Amino acid sequence: MIAETVCSAVSAAGLGIAVVTAYRKRYLAAVRVAAYSLVPIGLVMTGVVEWLADTAFSPTAWAGFGVLGVAWVLFMTTRTVERRRGGTRKERRAAARAADRADAVAPAASAPSLGQGSRPATGRAPASRGDDFSDIEAILKKHGI
Image (cartoon, rainbow, N blue to C red; front, side, top):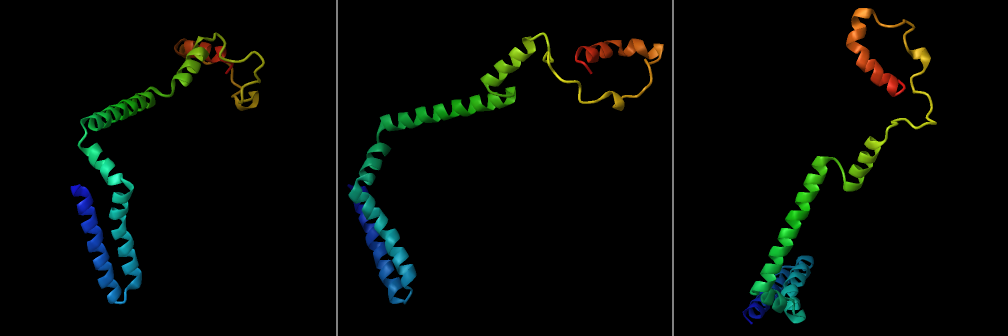
């Protein structure tokens, strides 16, 4: 009841300001002020003000807003964790399946993108360095590089 009275008073004051603005020959501004001043009374007439007043003083409504807030926090937390882990559940499953396969290269795969012409023509590395890089060479040969 008080909210309806306040909205009516605000609308009446706004229409008064619109009349004074129109008297000063600023018609465009006067129409704009009149439009803004009619909004509160329109909200009262549609019942929005009554609904807002009932919602503002309802413990059930505030509990509902609290539940929505908790849901939003949980959703944002899971999105943050998902981004830090590096993808969605579907992407992680696909990566796990790819890691489980024994062959990293498909059987009918083409030759490596670096052709034979781009490699140096020298033979094997000297024997002193061969021991240091033997495990790296084995990994590269396994992948066809």
